[in-house]
Length: 94
Image (cartoon, rainbow, N blue to C red):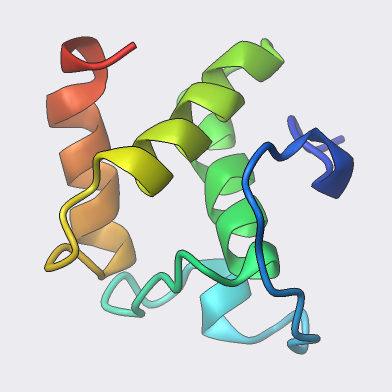
């Protein structure tokens, strides 16, 4: 079961239907850009990041959402670079 559901997200998003095998949802390849305004992409990214970090608490997923929306610099866009930024900046932000 995913860590977060659509109803858990705290920010406003567009919810454009994207096929489930689309790399924007699967997160592969790593060079795929994350569209931070698209709910399906953000939700899939957060849940993928949660699996990679073996998170069980929704608060970690919600912190990821907050960091993506409030602090992630606009020039960091690929899934790989977003994950790297999150790891490097996790403790810098509440």
